[in-house]
Length: 521
Image 1 (cartoon, rainbow, N blue to C red):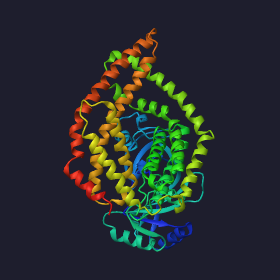
Image 2 (cartoon, rainbow, N blue to C red; image 1 turned 180 degrees about the vertical axis):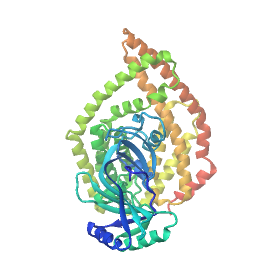
Image 3 (cartoon, helix red, strand yellow; image 1 turned 45 degrees about the vertical axis):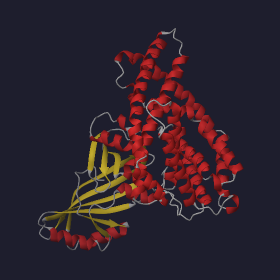
Image 4 (cartoon, helix red, strand yellow; image 1 turned 30 degrees about the vertical axis):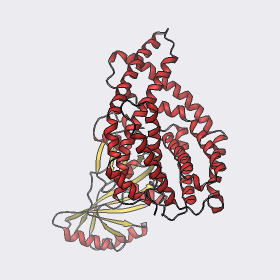
């Protein structure tokens, strides 16, 4: 990144591995070319990204430098969006970028509700030169750049960016050929300083992945596959604990809870190859870990969905809505303190130790009651059974069906999704992608329906607890009544759309794909 000068599109980049090599190159070039200084700058660059590096994964870098907040392309250093920014701290969330425009839109699209964290801090020393021929004419421009970690003295990157001038392409080629004897010559701008800084520090932005493909082979014993699933889920739980305690963003708790649910699901679907007594005990422990965060997560979801829940509500209900959500935030603060106390208690480390010891014992076939069963056999049996159950249950439902069967069907869909996530590598090809896409559509509808039920029950419970003698409570009661009515309308619309959505999942092509893919050989 070269923020303190006008952007420089380099045709060629020369990378040097030491100051000595760079000095030797300069001495050699001095016999044929002259160098005339054209400016110098030192700048500090603070890079931000989400915990799971969402911007980096999309090829973006977000930096604060020289009084601006900039979103840049990691491929070619192009500044895609920028705005004045005097604070070295990034906005915690995209919504904190006050100015509407490309920067806020891009951050909102990529980062969603994840917070922006400081990920790297670099110091750049940049010098611009005009390269002169024997007659003193400028034939090309070159920028010398060195980058070091802030507070450090030794650069991890030394580069020259070469831009030829029109009509002097031959001189530029000669310059680059000579320089290439001392450094690594490559076309284009070279690696982005952020990318190279992460490589220097051994940071892998893609190491954390809550739904990583575990790469099972069909013949792998199922008990070893179970061990991999449990170990990965424990890694996700532990990776998210600091973010929960810091209350950085709500996604830390969400990922933590998903990993716990996946663990309980895995203990069930691998049941035939796991020892029953130890498995049941671990299920109880994992369930207790999840229950400790139930209330905070329920409050988080409700607060996050405030805009959609209250959309199009008449303005007369605003006072009650404001008071209600203010109380919810206060309740969330109280419940969060309880959650933090649990996370710092002895119960969590004891539960994780039990989890880790269970996984360790799975390294031996002696711990499994069925060590000869392959993961492919378990996968096909579970997916086929779960899909058949979904077809049977869903085929009986319609817009007028009670809520509980819809809830049970949603659970079946969630377990089927976990199966497909665990075993995705066993079923390569386009057909399984088609199957999963249709599955997600139906699960999305059922998830929205369940969200409405949870939100309605949440509001109904709080309405029942109100003391209607106070003015605030009367306003809240009226607002909650309106919100509940609005949720009922949404539930009705979703129920009316259920038959058509379910028909897609149960059509002949889906059944044919399931029959071919998930049948044990």
